[in-house]
Amino acid sequence: MRILLVEDHLPLAESVAQALRGSGLTVDVLHDGVAAAHALVCEEYSLAILDVGLPRLDGFEVLARLRGSGKTLPVLMLTARGEVKDRVHGLNLGADDYLAKPFELAELEARVKALLRRSVLGGEQQQHCGELVYDLGTRRFTLRDQPLALTSREQGVLEALIARPGRVMSKEQLADQIFGLDEEASPDAIEIYIHRVRKKLEGSGVRIVTFRGLGYLLEAVDG
Image 1: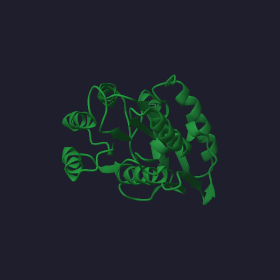
Image 2: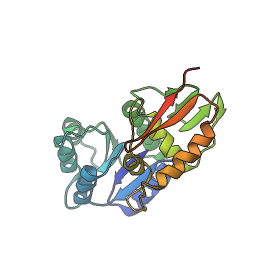
Image 3: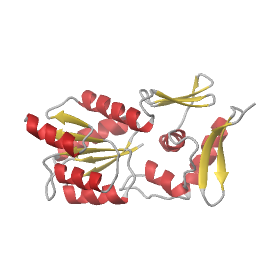
Image 4: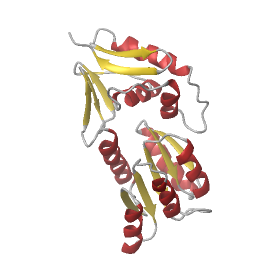
């Protein structure tokens, strides 16, 4: 899953990004509100973490523009302001959660997982496709009750597919989920990862179906 972190304090941004990447998430890091507002319009994210005190455009205005565009992705606000009125203002604008600085990285990771669980898995801890199970808490896949070994790219592809049951995802959509802004996003590379994941699913009753010209769908095969 791909998230956007917008924080102008560079050491904090790097610490948070490293922690989240260590959990297997793809993290884009930006440092000002104008760049964030642009990225949220042009890129596809599962969650955004916004600092309130951003240069050029503060986090409240970025959030207001995001909600004004009709996008509903979860947003976690970070702030050094402890006033209740600021928290209320952010929540009224459409923030999903609030975390005051200073904070422990473990708490931020827990809040991120909770928001993703609610938005991606509809509040469930696990997503199932036949005998393939994805646990958002551990961010691990099991197949027939056995751990499924995946590289980070393979994991990203399978996460995106299992989170959208019954929906075809294009190569471009999958690339948006697994490549960050600073990486070469190659839709054609998705074919390689799809091939590798298919090999690991062989004989399990779970398969990735290709819809030529449209994309890919994860499904369980009856019988």
